[in-house]
Amino acid sequence: MTRIALRPAVEEAAEILGRAGVHSPRADAELLAAHLLGVQRTRLILVPLIEPEQLERYRELVARRAQRVPLQHLTGVAAMGEIDLAVGPGVFVPRPETELLFAWALAFLETLPRDHSPIVVDLCTGSGALALAIAHARPDARVHAVELDPDALVWARRNADDRAADGDTAIAVHAADVTDPTLLTELNGRVDVVVSNPPYIPENAVLDPEVVDHDPHRALFGGADGLDVVRGMVPTIARLLRPGGATAVEHDDSNGSTLAALLNAEVGTFTEVVEHPDLAGRPRFVVARRAVSVDPA
Image (cartoon, rainbow, N blue to C red; front, side, top):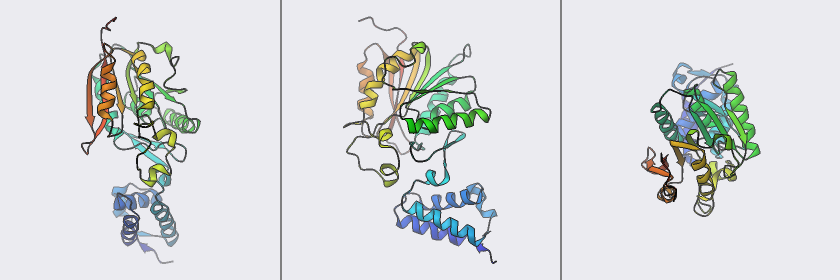
């Protein structure tokens, strides 16, 4: 049976995806081919020919991507830091923008003295992306991940088990509400870093089909201004952080200043409140330090 050139098939796929409105048609066409062939995208050039049945399967994947099924649902994985996470229907797909928050967390942890194992809490963990990427990069850390949605918890626990089986330090996954005043009370005033990528999209936002049709709405929307969950989460963050500890919370590009104002309004609780942009220059996450001395007033 005659084998078929891969490059024209990828070119055809990129054209199909472009016409379908996919934002990165060529990259997605190449990533789907790499996934199908079990190679890295950069090594596709080493696979000039494919079998007819592989071409058929490839075209099926491209057709589903053209229907705006998320790329990660087709490949079954999403990346965060140096790890891959299993994702699919029922859990929020981690976005590249969150890599910046992850990098901030690692940089902050590097500033801490090595006199204790740092404690990290990831609120609204979803697939476990931030918690597990931090645990991989800092095997000395004690990491706790909190998630309320039962479908997302299945993915978080699966990923936690996979990473532990691969040799990473195990994390603790908690089925709980991040606004619950009894959440992790044994860690009150002891946590070095709290990170969160919570539901933050304003309810009237217009979203791409990959998002609105496939990501769980519970993981997306945070009320009229996108900050309902965050408002309820701020007391939890303040309670958990040790003096001098820090938090980073991702947000919609429309509400960064509002989130910073929320933290600044906690007079005597948070200091050094700073807004951070993403790679496109849009407001993306806010960081703050827990005040070393709390004003009793």
